[in-house]
Length: 320
Image 1 (cartoon, rainbow, N blue to C red):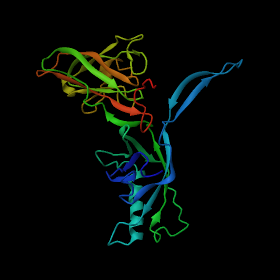
Image 2 (cartoon, rainbow, N blue to C red):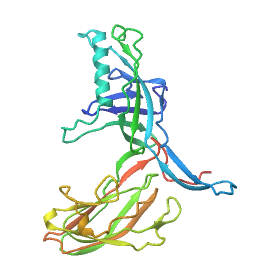
Image 3 (tube, helix red, strand yellow):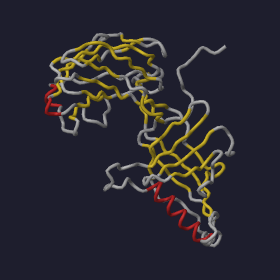
Image 4 (cartoon, helix red, strand yellow):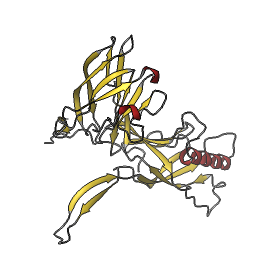
């Protein structure tokens, strides 16, 4: 890898440290990616399942399933950059600090519980991030005196449990708002990413009716369609709950109060069941509320833009 091959890589540690490891700023903190020591950064890995009949004759595709992303990354760590501390001391402390930032579990006493992240920035697609965690202690060759040499080349095994790169939430966040106790209208949703969006909706108190359609169409032209194109769900958000979050994200409770209390029982099995397909263009979905408190109500959609690659994969176009 050349430091000027079109993309920049930065590592953000669990304690909010930043390490520029590739690109124009590579080595600014004394750490950079070793040439030929990076694998697993591009495509999100998946497994294909196939079925075969007893009589043979080939196989039939059943499904594809994305699996955790495993990466192997080697870094150069040197001891330069200090006029008052011996290089061997800098190298030792710097390597230890980098290991702590990159491979330690989130500090469980911290209210933010940050995980380590890798950010790739390109002119083509901007910045995309991946939450990462070490799966093993770094492999360090100590056949020589790494402190006296003031240089270390640790090799890290990293895993992203969610293998998709994130470029943040759709911004501005799609929202519906009314100043009265009842109201109806539409909200414009979209998913520019190439991964189905399992979105969440933040609701203020009231009795809501939310669209949750099935979808149909070609990539970049998909629209509500198919067997449940008009599907909606009713969501009761008690005033005492202070608000609620309804979510398709399997890592979240399907509906929880603003403080995180489980509200699943009040929904009686009515939940969001459809993701936003990859490359969903701006689409208006109906939404309404009644029995809201004085002052009105608001619904805000949290749609994360997820990608199978660190760059590219925007909506397909017809190439000449």
